[in-house]
Length: 343
Image (cartoon, rainbow, N blue to C red; front, side):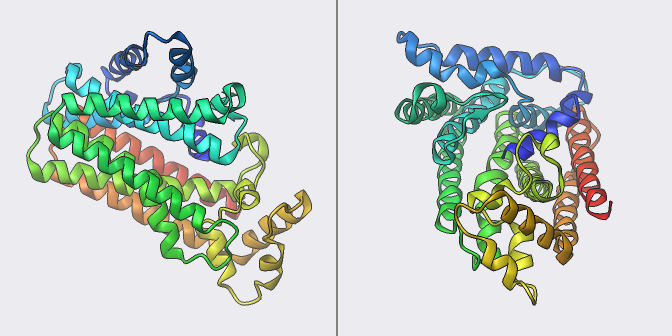
């Protein structure tokens, strides 16, 4: 999801920071993350702390905090349990990144050398397992529902990743497979972030479900925009080559739609392992020319609109202001992707 990281980097600030307490609350999440990975083994602590020290916007714990803040009308700081819940979902995210970087043989992550590039694949996998275990410990301390939720989310992350790997370099990958994969890899953890905050804040069940829907729909739109940007942004913007997913054999929604268009024989012939730069660039040009990116943007708009609609059951609150700001920001990125296509 490197492109998705780009989406938040260009904004300059976390879109949830319209909530006055959010910066302080995220500082508390950071402190909690640093604390829970401390072990008697200083080597393990160093590896497990690597991406925590690299920082980040902490969007997922931010969603947990904002979801909990829908329960009150004043600008109060998050409770300790909400902070711990946010830390748990972030540890799941970080653990999955350790594993993803091994799968992708990635050399960087969050603009620092990846764990696997420094300490090797075996240590990266074990450190990722350690982060997931720490997340499970925190979740268990917050009650059986949160513990079960995090366990189910980890399963969905694995299922989404496996589904993607099943269809690497597969030009006949069904579009349904794409949506099921991003539901597990991206939408599930954002949904869980919101749901965790809502459960810990003891919100009514219908509000817990609404916040879960917000996170899921937001995550779907988020990933589609990320996949569009992989095809329409330049290398400097993304921090990776345009069309990088094509090189990795990950055929996303615009690619699959382009392959389904009449006259896609040339594109299909170019989608091979070890494609050269010229072939990659030609593939990008063919996909852009096919007009399918507009359709993907429509899908992203629809999912973003579903996220906004899910919040209609709530009254005004700091949490709703934060989540609405995040949704507005996402819609702005959808429009930004559309302007790149038309421009």
